[in-house]
Every structure is written in structure tokens, then in C-alpha cells.
Image 1 (cartoon, rainbow, N blue to C red):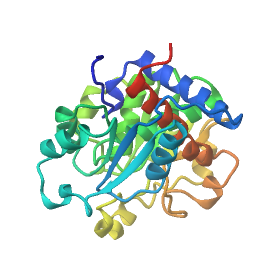
Image 2: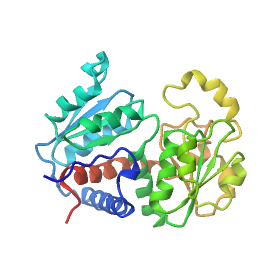
Image 3: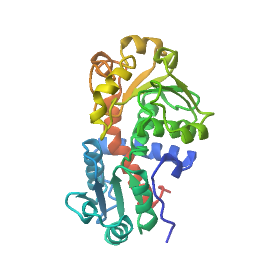
Amino acid sequence: MSEIRHFLTLMDFSRDELQQLISRAIELKASRKKGEIHEPLKNMTLAMIFEKSSTRTRVSFEAGMNQLGGQGMFLSSRDTQLGRGEPIEDSARVISSMVDVVMIRTFGHDIVENFAKYSKVPVINALTDDFHPCQLLADMMTYVEHRGSIAGKTATYVGDGNNMCHSWMNAAKQFGFHLNIACPKNYEPDEKLTKSLSDHITIFHDIKDAVKNVDLITTDVWASMGQEDEQKIREKAFKSFMVNDAVMALADKDAIFMHCLPAHREEEVSASVIDGKQSVVWDEAENRLHAQKALLETLVVGFPK
């Protein structure tokens, strides 16, 4: 039996493997558009553990597993022993003995790491407080579809130094581009990660400097899940960090705009940008489905020969 592989951050795959994954996702998307049936995971089950609410993650994983011939099983902390304090390692041993792959959307990154340590099957990080690697697979796929390779380009992430920012930082290294990060003071990304990726990122506290001539601008909500009580404080801190038409005008004329969604129009992004011609957010959202299908197929049965 081949070694079990997990996908907890983008660093779990090599650069070549990530490129192969993106290419496979594009193939699977084209195949679906043609109405072709592809069921490599027939009679297999994906356990989907949700401790945080979700729209795109649940729909894309459940639909994707169905399209690959298997089924997705929704498990919330409200309905399982996880929510009653069962040790993660015990849940991992039991759940992984009954299913073929596990997806977890939770708070602490240590939860997915601990689960993976005791799991008999591949584990996918579908979002933690520190990383959101599945979103970046969709984002990289979307850039390739619209502009070709992102290698050698410059992207700007605008907003909080959160899980999305951290995954964009990892992506800069793994896909070979430079990432500018525009954030207010005291909202910078993790210091340890920043030091380890210093060759691939530059932090700015002025949005105008961060977006000059860049090829892509992306942003996220100012208050992530669990930070709603900080909303008013964050609105003040981030008020000069909205991505609007004036900001997009400073980027390269062919720059595209991304957002992981859900979006708050007229907060982190203006309606004119997210609904405008440079926005690729709807392709980006759909691509969660195709990128995750490629990921599921790869983790369970391996890269196509």
C-alpha cells in the first residue's frame, strides 16, 4: 500500500505536483462541461467534518465527491462526539477506519495536524484559523485559465494577515511569484511564517504602494469567522484598505481581481470592482469544485498515469 498523504497546507505537495494538480483540475473541468462521466472514487466515502459554517466548501466537496462516483458524509460538531470533547486522536482512529478520505473545516490548525497523525486515510484541510490551501488551488487554477502561468508575476493581497494571507504567502513560494501584502499596522501575518518566506513577500502599510503595476489583486473580509466582535475596531483600522476602482487603476491594465467570498461590498471591496470586468470571483468560486476533485482523486488513487 502506498504511503498516506495529507493536504494540510500547500507545502505538503512539491511545486511540480501542484502544477500537475492544477492541470488535472482544468482537465476535469473540461470533462464535466462535455458531460463526460468520470468515477474513480466509486463506492468511496468522504467524511466532511465541519466545526465552522460553510457554503462553498460544503457544496464543492459534496458535489465533487458525488461527481467522482463516491459520496460525501456531512458531520458537524453539534451532531458528533467531537463536539462533546472526544479526543481528536480517538475520533481520527474511528472515523478513518470507516471512510476513504476526510475533510476538516475547523479552528486551530493543530486539530487537523493531530487528526492526520492518527488517521488511516488522507486528510484535507478545508480551512483552519491559520491556512486555507484548498482556496489557493482554485485561485491558482483561475489565474492560469485567465492569464497563463503566474510564475514570475506579482500579486497583492490586501487585508488582514489571516489564514488567506498565510496561504497566499505559501503559494508565492510554491508557484514562483512575488506577493505584496497591504495591511494596517498590527494586522501583519504570522511573524515566523513571514521570516521563513521573506524572499517571496513584501509587506506594505500603504495600499497604493502595494498595488503599483501588479498582475493580480486579492482581498478578504476584514473580520474573519470568530472575530465578529472586532468588526467596529477593524472597520476603523482597515478603512483605507478597500479595493476600489482607484486602487485597480494603479495595477497593470490586465490585472485581475480575486476574492475568496463571502464578500462585503463597500467594505473590503467596492461593488464596481467585484462586479466589474476585471473580477474573476465567480470562476474562482466554481473552481473550488474542480480543484478539489483533482485533489481528492490524487490523494485517494494517485496522480493519473
